[in-house]
Image 1 (cartoon, one colour):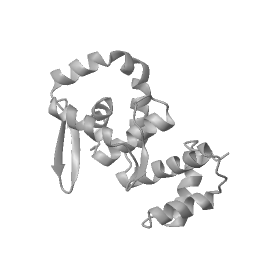
Image 2 (cartoon, rainbow, N blue to C red):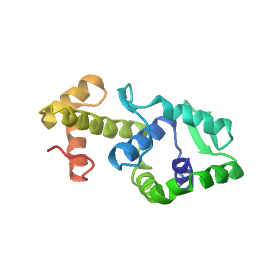
Image 3 (cartoon, rainbow, N blue to C red):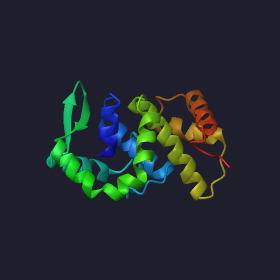
Length: 172
């Protein structure tokens, strides 16, 4: 819910795909313990439970999920409900709120497709490293291009280099 509030506060529209990717980055890159189990899916790393939790927040009126021009817009819900949930999550927000806010600030301007590529690269690199699979940037680029042919291998390589420079991924 803190992500929804931060995105709204900064004036950017949050959709379901972007929400999932931001939660992925928070958990898998910035070590915020969100409790989701991600797997590689059509639009990159995905955990169905995030959308289940969003549905529950919507049911409680803590979030509004609206269909708009071919996509979803996620907005904060009723202030009193949000305050009640925030109070119950106070220790978590006290500990991780700054990380959540900073992550939203860093990635808020990116379209879902850009977040898809970033998180897919991150997921594949980490999966290879965890499974002790030797790889090159070209291996990663080729694999992701096979999964997502709408990204060229060169665009993927460029993004890998950018993410490495920004220390979002490490290849060693």
